[in-house]
Length: 132
Image 1 (spheres, one colour):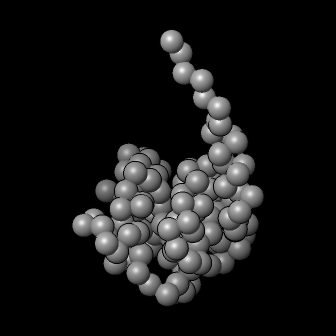
Image 2 (cartoon, one colour; image 1 turned 90 degrees about the vertical axis):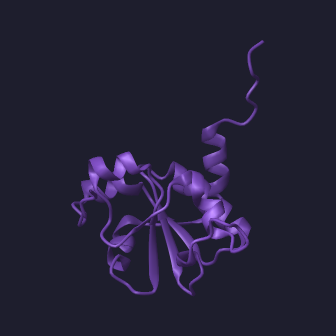
């Protein structure tokens, strides 16, 4: 028996994008050095090692986001307990759209994501920090 997927990834991402704030790339680049914004890289560590990351971004693998946000979780990270704007990104903007929606639903605020993700950042020749 095969599965009957009734809501695919494109629909889920579209639903997320309808309720979240998407930061245009040029605006994100201007905020990258702001001390009032926390950039969160949701990509897998292998992606970070291969391509680098936005300088100063905090690495939070997508699978740990909810656990690290929740202050009652034994895995909570204090970086998610600041009065700052959280700027999430992934490779293309799909994981970060879903993650931004989830973070908002959990109460993290304000939280936005970067249009086009790290791929667009690289194309625009934004600064990149290597990850060892």
